[in-house]
Length: 120
Image (cartoon, rainbow, N blue to C red; front, side, top):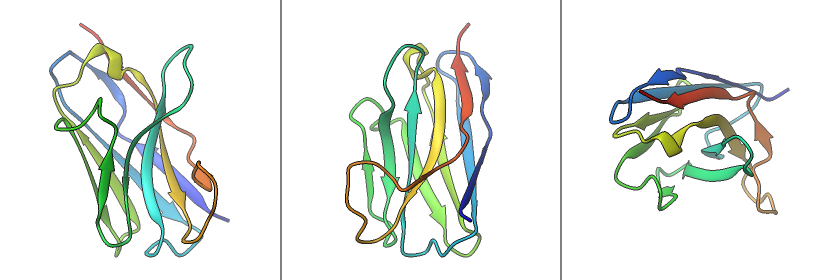
């Protein structure tokens, strides 16, 4: 079965950086759109960034210019580089994957999530 395992979360000061990684297994991911979503305490899950099989990227306005999503199809990994972090970036971050032709707003599969806390 599909498994998405995130790593790299933690505590960082405002203005700092973190890199999140996600290892995918149990499927064929090269054709999938990979992404990151997040959920802050008391809020709904929200889109952060996606990257298509061809390398096209899309970002939430709140993270544009600060976050960068990349993927390595040979290793089935996706990475989220986060810079200039703000307290409002504090959330559980989820790695996701969506199969080609899949309908619906949300991804098909989600990881367990990794906590990112931005605080001084």
